[in-house]
Image 1 (cartoon, protein in one colour):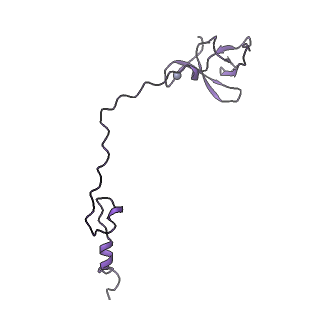
Image 2: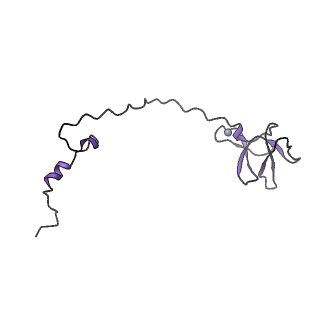
Image 3: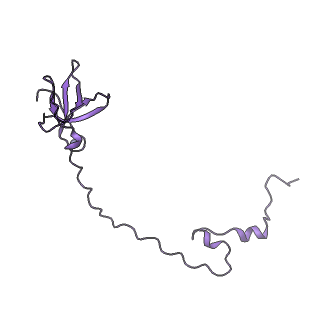
Length: 131
Ligand SMILES: [Zn+2]
């Protein structure tokens, strides 16, 4: 290959980025592939230009038959096994003592304030009623 290539970010295989007829970027395997279905060439600005080949269509004289890299890119390696055991599901909430209001809808670390509301707020506002 007498043209610059880049490593694929997933599999590190050498690829070239081509521009399709729809002006989209398409990665191609860097080496020409007789099984490929893309005809590609380098334009005067050294950009790869790619077009899909129909069944039985041959690349033109100035084109090479290339393989889209999506067809050959190997999947990334599986993630490393987890060393930490997944946490157990949270334990069931203990039953509320009888007579506890609203307890069923509150998390265990929250104190219901409905009892205080029923007694009435006896504190006065610090700025009101000081005359
Ligand atoms: Zn790849």
